[in-house]
Length: 544
Image (tube, rainbow, N blue to C red; front, side):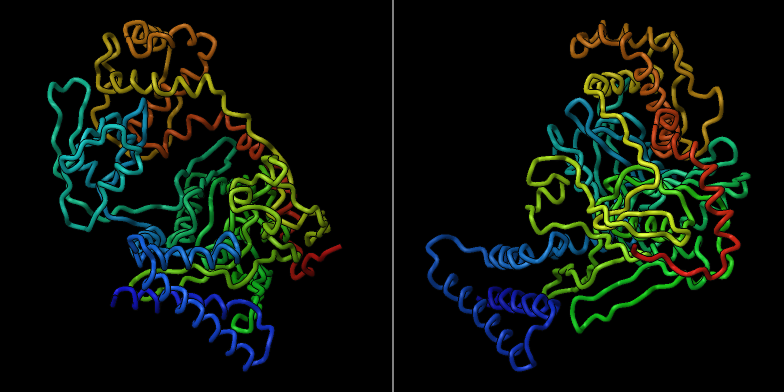
């Protein structure tokens, strides 16, 4: 009964928060009457349920469902967190978690180590690419999805987790007792120098408390290597802390140039224009890469740089999430992310796309009621500082649209057999190719020309492996028609085993059509920055 009363108070508190966030439509007395009605309705409904429901009652589940229902009618991005979910959310936003420090994934129906993080507990313990996780703390992982295995290996700092590994060449499973520690979750996953002095930063892991510092450091490191132009890749970056987006824009915009406008929906949140404050911004030519999974803070950065003609935007129209959420800690440790305002780019474009005539599934999957898989913005025209046409009404439309090729199902099915082969190759168990054995995990670095070569000898060994494998024998006939992909994927696994996933992404640069187009369009970015430099305080963009 006491627990039910606590949860009832939490539900009422949430209802009042939601009520306070919407625009007032009556005077003070009218608002008070509405608040009283909300409180009494919730109390009465939950009280009747508690006293009369015939089945087994879970008060916590009941309150969670009632809160979720309230949020459902508001917008797709307001959300409720249980205590556990709220703690995990805060941990992710701090760019760290407590665990063993390794990336895991599913291959051929089981969970394997892809790579440890350099210096992590897993790295120090000797965990390596291709290790099959067969049990965690004595519990079999057979048939588990990798997310469940990963969650099982996380826990409080300083606690011990027992991981059982099956490794090729070892007659018995290996037992590892690993002490959990803080594991950094950097926002920047890849930093590389491309051709012609172009630096590349893949910023795809959300905007956390360390993002702006990471971008600053990446720029300094690339400049030290001779960078004279930059590609900022925010594809698949779902957003996060807006203050980090503002700090990143400060790197590239002059003091006084508007970064974003935040317009509140209630008297409790005033509208605000946020200006840049940097009197010596970076002058590098800049291309920004985005796609349909670039959202929120990513769109603030892309929109501000595009509106001020500071960067050329390449890729696909972004997701279109322009709602501001505030995070509230609730009684009993739960959390509430509640929409309180909307974002607008410097030219006045609303980032948020319309969700009023579609279900949450249609909205989040970017499928409209007609079943089409792509959302189309309203195409309302706005102008950048120099008069270029940009479009509003949902997401950021790129200056140069480039769609990636659809995944090839036949090639995707080859990833599992290739992984089974490279597990043996990296452990020195392929006759005649013992030199490919990985003795030490090096961590992230640049791949040098001539490294990790996959020649005909390696592909011939792969064919023999398939012929001798009962599980993968049927794939042998498909190799020649997909030989380029096979060589690339074997090389990707080889690099992953020695240097990690961040370095392995360099293997795919050549076939990344959006990245290659960004490189090709750098000359346009150079013209943009050349025109931007002497502009001074030219007036901001406006709607036409």
